[in-house]
Length: 64
Image 1 (tube, rainbow, N blue to C red):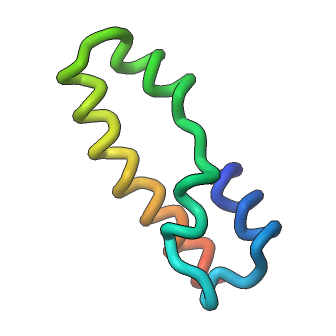
Image 2 (cartoon, rainbow, N blue to C red):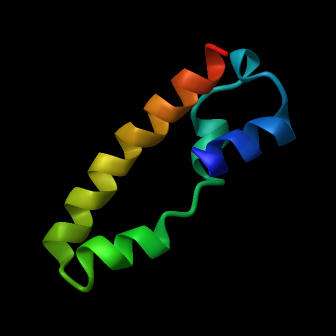
Image 3 (cartoon, rainbow, N blue to C red):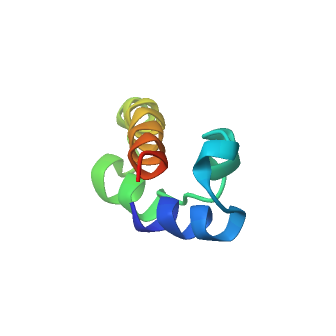
């Protein structure tokens, strides 16, 4: 959430931007390493899950 909010502060009101404008600025590498380690299958699941979580965070921020 902090990274999504920080990016939105940089680009301005989220209503005029898409989630693609935000997701590239979110770095979840430390979390991925913590939860998936070196396991490729868990890493892929983590990546799939976080795409949805970033979208949810963006949508929530856009509604404020």
